Amino acid sequence: MKKNTSLVKLLWWPLSLTIWFTLVDCTNVRTQTLAQCASQSNCPPVNKAGWPSGTSIQVFIDPSIVGDRRNAIVQAFSNWAGASGNLGNNAGVAYTIVNAPPAAGTYSFTVSSGAPVLNPGDRAETTTSKNQSGQTLHAATLLDPNVTDPAAIREVMAHEIGHPAGFGECDACSPSDSVMAPGPPQGQYNAVVGRPTSPTPCDNAQLFFNNYGACPATLPVPGSNWAWDVYCCCWAETPASDGCASGARQECLGRNTGNNGFNYYWDPEDCFCMYHTPILIDPSGNGFSMQMVRAASISTWTTTARRNTLRGLLPAPTTRGWSWIATPMA
Image 1 (cartoon, rainbow, N blue to C red):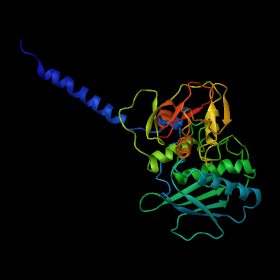
Image 2 (image 1 turned 90 degrees about the horizontal axis):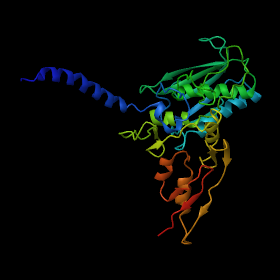
Image 3 (image 1 turned 120 degrees about the horizontal axis):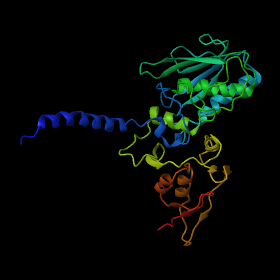
Image 4 (image 1 turned 90 degrees about the vertical axis):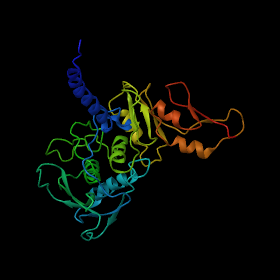
């Protein structure tokens, strides 16, 4: 009996195409698969190239903005600068406050007092212009003069600085997820919604991965509950929800931004943010390398996969905090 090979080939071709497209799609490792974003439901989209790496941005603040309002703006820029290192978003961007308007064509950011024009009723709006490479060259924020509370200004400006850095709006983010989460309804100028005033670990990982040279994810993905960690360049197993308040873990680990990533860690059993320094045990009395231990310790200890990739450190088998054993030096 002659086999109907043409039918087999016809059926196999779309199946092959489907499999091929599925494999290609697996390379699209984006927001939902970064380890630093795995514990939250939504992550801010990166829709711009951001500032060129290592750029010094001249920041000119309208002289009519004074006192606590000005100080709050300066603090927001300082918070972003503190997140630009290789333990943050790796942008290497610095913000320098200047006393005169920057010259045209220079990397600059101006903050002016005035009601938003594009979306009246918003607390602020930011426009950007690009250089020939498509990266941010200039940004201008209009801050409504009705926004007077320093805490509200810090939230507003942390959000606005995020736009020229590369972010779009994250309307689906909860307040604790991102500096790009939504603000209050229009007209509530001085409402404080609990949005971060520094980039969160997820914010930083997003910019690092998309704009600032993080290592690309390697395939295959180990499993459905694994996510790419941009700092160790490895796949990390993401734990199930710890049953604690939404955003509490992110807020805790976010305290390490600008603090060497060293002092805070999250206890999921007691839903508690702990301040610590590592306890080092030398079981054989031969000594150990403090430089090695410190280099490993400054990473965020969130996953089994990450801890196991750090040479010389082994996690204790407990969920109530961590202890470390240093490998003796040869």
